[in-house]
Image 1 (cartoon, protein in one colour):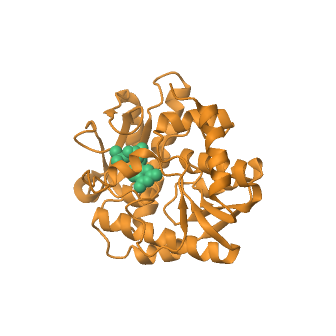
Image 2 (cartoon, helix red, strand yellow):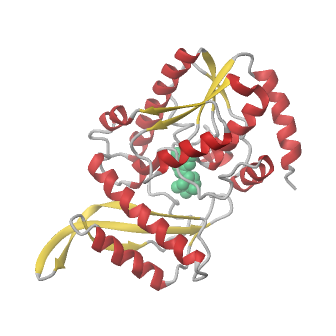
Image 3 (cartoon, helix red, strand yellow):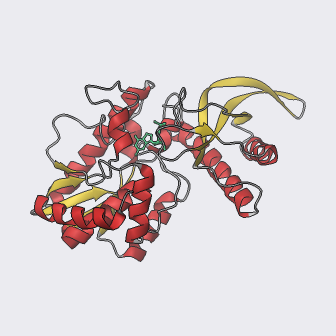
Amino acid sequence: MFDAEAFVNEKVEEIKGAIDGKAIIACSGGVDSTVAAALVSRAIGDRLLTIYVNNGFMRKGETEAVEAMFKRVGMNYRLIDASDEFFDAMKGVIDPEKKRKVIGERFIRVFERVAREYGAKYLVQGTIAPDWIESGDGVRDTIKSHHNVGGLPKDMDLILVEPLRDLYKDEVRKVARYLGVEVAERQPFPGPALAVRVIGEVNRESVAIVREACAIVEEEMEKAAAAGKMTLPWQYFAVLLPCQTVGVQGDVRAYGRTIAVRAVESVDGMSASYSKVPHEVLERISVRITNEMKSDVNRVVYDITNKPPATIEYE
Ligand code: XMP
């Protein structure tokens, strides 16, 4: 049985010994990076600077919500708007692995700049076991390069500290509850953010479409769960597919884009089954997306694939 208290005590001592100066951590407000930040700040206090990098691919309202959380917790933090440089870097990038590598590298370049200004030589990351397992380690095949592992450039000049490396998601949540981290029950969200939910080129327009669709999926599933119509899936979101199909709006032909809705049940993200979301909830999502986003989207499909053979995210 995993013992969160023993884990925290052991890691805090280990981190005290490992970090002899200042460190930075990039925190997206997700469970892994927030737990890593809480753990390391227990060990080194204000020698840790928490940064939130807005890459332009975050969900609706996310930046504001994360900043409010940092303030409530009293973190030593800085917000960095790097969206222009991320969107520039994504021009013409279609291949999923290339996308992840470009994003990973951009993140590191931002971290290096901030670390230089702050005088930090350590970079803390909330990497967990599935991140490096799926990224391949010379033994296993690369399923996808998680941004914080396979996406790291070789010439990075920061020393990595990864206190959660050996944990799985369910164990990270136990540590989060033990530390009183308020995001313990949040659904997972990938580091490359909405960029891996746009199949095809990531630009301001495509991200805006998937951001709106994701917000509708989250809102409707959370509302239905609160009303007792379903239990909230382990993860639930929208993906913008790279195809257009024919439709009809009023009595006029439409040729619009397609949104896939994905919802899965899982324990640790290593395997998953698709969620049996009630049809009335799916219908409500479809009606809202095609009404509220009618100039862009005219078709919504529900993904009924388990992992394996699919992965949870599409890229
Ligand atoms: P897949 O898509 O590989 O995802 O089945 C398993 C879980 O990991 C999340 N995920 C990521 N998390 N960095 C992260 O921190 C990443 O690059 C990344 N890619 C996928 C995914 O959302 C799911 O919960």
